[in-house]
Image (cartoon, rainbow, N blue to C red; front, top):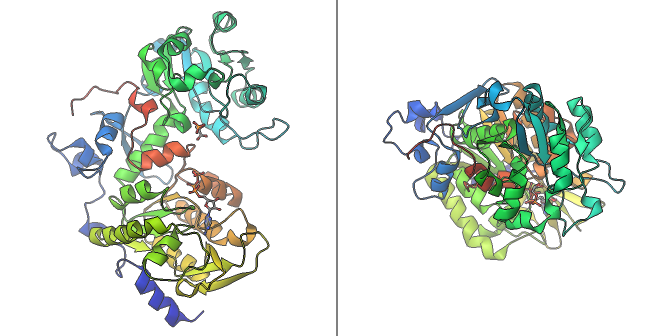
Length: 485
Ligand SMILES: Nc1ncnc2c1ncn2[C@@H]1O[C@H](COP(=O)(O)OP(=O)(O)OP(=O)(O)O)[C@@H](O)[C@H]1O
Ligand SMILES: O=C(O)[C@H](O)COP(=O)(O)O
């Protein structure tokens, strides 16, 4: 590809021609108290939200006056505001106590009811083990799928063998989640024992968050732990309603870690801070892009959404995915990035296909040369190089959404290249956060999941959190220290 064409396109597509804004010209990335030492400063601002955005509620969600810090992978100090955590409870708080633990065991199962991805099961283990070790009687509750009434294929029974294996004890399974059989099983549960309740969504009252149902769930326990980050954006009986009847109601270790990274590390990042946003449509990522534009130094865009940006800039996009009603929005996002000094990079070349199929004919073309009848399905090699160079300058990276149609091997190169780059940088101490959804699948496919600083177990929940929305399952939990904001 002619480099002259590439550089012309590049300057057209970049909102700023400069290198990433240096930390010296932005608010320094230090711990929250250093940035805002005075109590009178809005804690919401100290979390990095502009005063008019939707984060006011977020403040009341995640913030207490107590800061929690821990060493994340890559040896950076991650700071977030804390809800009361299961780690804050003493041994005496837990020994012999019946603890209702909401976990997210909504895992994919194949036709033979085998778990095809046990990430969420493994992620639930640290909290459960902690409770076992402290002599608690552990009552696990989860949903699986979206059943309408009792549906055998959505039973949690297939989870028992893997859970038992990971915990090193035999997990007992109840056939219901409320009622006399459950009460009997709870009564016979020894200290350190684990009971898995049946799919809580077999009752329509769960999703309706009916207080009477929440009360029944709560009646079998002494206290509540929510570790179901993936479901924290749902105000359901087992995630929200139950907290009205069980005190204390605290966060599990997984939920805490998700908040530490997706709120703490994103709001107070080591800079330069890059966000990579991909996926299919700009309309589904508007909130995330707008929210990240408030915080990041570099924004890299990929996936199907880029064609709406191209078209908004007057480029031809052939038969690529375009949202014609979002052209003005794309233009305004580019302007916003420029105004904020964020270096927004769009791919300068793309891999186009003559049909949407794994065996399509493909070509690499500059972004300005997509012909009629062709559709862009991946970012091209020049873009990968430019993105990699930009990422090389960073200290924190968050990634949400694939760069192309990675489900088709032929168009997976861009997504896999980003996954490999993040793995390399993670090894050099850069904080790398994978914000849920398909990017997690891509990272796993490449086999680099274990080296990332954090991989979110939430799809919708992580998106909502990154958008600055409040998560009802988090709001409902006890504050570490009550605070008047
Ligand atoms: N150029 C493209 N044209 C069409 N579809 C694309 C393109 N690039 C990526 N996609 C598709 O986008 C989808 C992922 O988009 P989505 O917005 O759902 O991302 P996500 O946030 O990672 O996933 P999820 O919604 O599961 O959390 C993938 O199925 C991928 O094939
Ligand atoms: O898989 C998820 O995103 C969570 O388990 C929530 O499931 P839901 O979208 O069916 O509420």
